[in-house]
Image 1: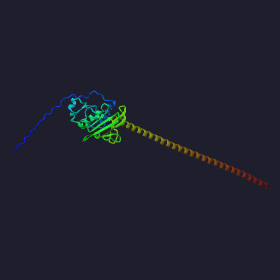
Image 2: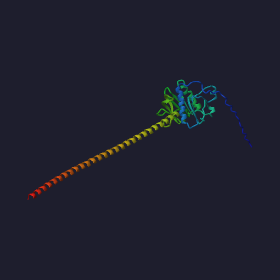
Image 3: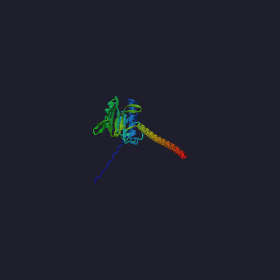
Image 4: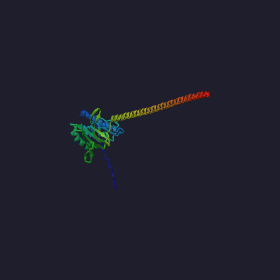
Length: 302
């Protein structure tokens, strides 16, 4: 009878050495626009996903993904990136992949400049596709107002289609990525923004609060205008009623005047008729007296 002997091999994994991982290299961003644009993207996403704690959105931060990279001080800091399905309840000064359960960015956006365009469109693009396996990668050239986008396919990055509005869909963000001409942080410019599936601009928290305040003010103004309209209508109705009462009073007065005139005329006619009857009676009485006198004279003459 044969026996099966199980051999268990043990491997001792070396501990990851403690490394000095800088948060930044002291190199400033290309322009103030780049800084503001990064803040804008972070503000928009954080407000849109304000009820979620399962993502981290960062900008102008180093991403450490291997010990060799860290030892070589080969710093990689995307302008903007999003990592999903992580604990986003606290801030990080840098993103260290091996401290984040091996999670890489799901979305990266690079803001091109003359000094970074070649790397962003070349080495970084290759790194994000083959090592990071970042599903959505976008590059925006502010000098040309041109947006580039790729989505990870079976053979690497594939060009993301662009719609009629010049926007590209990001399945990871569930939003369109496109351009917006407007004012942010008191700076008027063309900005890279996120839009909902139906094309509506996704606001920052400040923009949403300003919009809500404007809607409240507009509603208050509408109610004030409605109250003013109702007051004007009430005043117009009161004036119309007063005018109706005045006209009724005028007509009543006029009727009273006409009645008085008719009565006065009737009295005058009655007085004239009475005077005529009195004169006629006087005339008859005078004739009767004359006849009686003539009759007495004739009797006396006999």
